[in-house]
Image (cartoon, rainbow, N blue to C red):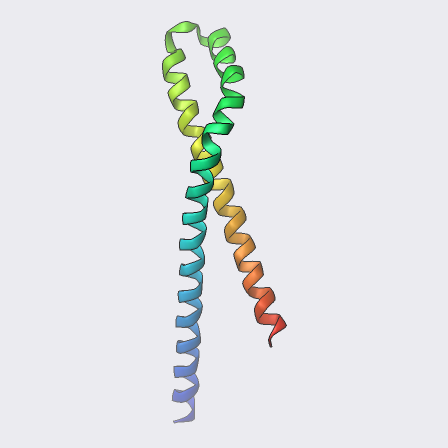
Amino acid sequence: VRLEVLSDLADHAQAGQHLFMSSVVGLANVLALVAAFLGGPTLFQYTAPTILDLTYQTYGGEIIGLAKLAWYGLCYLLIFFVARATIGTALIFGGLALVTRFM
């Protein structure tokens, strides 16, 4: 009977940990989406002239439109994934700091 109680407690703790981690992932995704929405156009504005000039010198003028569109999307993706990794890591370490502080 005692082993069943310990097993139930371990399952409950694991379920709580899963809920915490899924919440952290969800919050990191939402905040990263906001960061990409706000930072994507700025990154594109400052880097597009260099990228388009390099594209023109390397491939010619035929694919400048495609390169501009691709770089625009890549700017958003770059901001999103860097922000998601950073925010997710910060939330996990922040949660661990709170847990160790109050234990």
